Structure formats: C-alpha cells, structure tokens
Length: 94
Image (cartoon, rainbow, N blue to C red; front, side, top):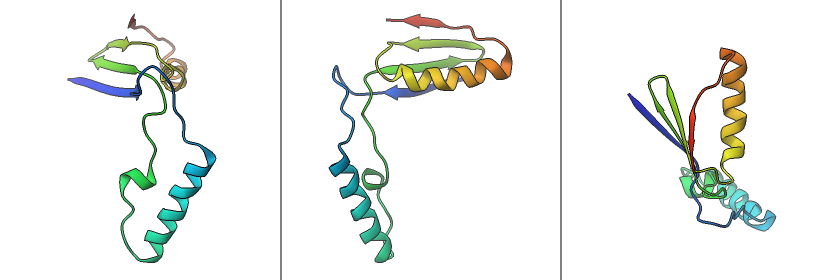
C-alpha cells in the first residue's frame, strides 16, 4: 500500500494568512454557525502556506520528495515517530 501526504503545496514563496484574513474566516464561520449552516472547507481550514514537501510511504519505506517549507511540519511528525519506534530511516530527493 502506498500512502502519500502533502506537507506543503505552494509554489516557491510561502504565503501564510494575515491576521486580517484569519479574522475574516472566523467571522464568516460564526455567521454560518449562527444560521445553522455547514462551514465549508475554505472557511474552516487553511491550505497552501508551505512550499512543496511530499511524504511517500511504501510499506516500510519512507521517501521525502522535495524539502520546501513543509518539511518543518513533516519533521515534527517524523520526530514523534522516531522516538516511538527508536529509529528513522528514509530517502530524501531534492
């Protein structure tokens, strides 16, 4: 079984949301909630802030494709796994 996780999908420049954009999302979510309406993904979530980093797991093999800004979150995740399993082994391609 192959499992693929995207830790970053933005192009060359990271683009986190500004505080004003976050506040706008919160306000829209509250408004929809008060109306009893579902909160769509684009309002309740964020995406695309980190540059490309893709984790591919093929059984017991780990491949990391690109090491853009998304590698920070991947690294946090992998450190937890490494401490739990007492090892970490993979292949990085740039």
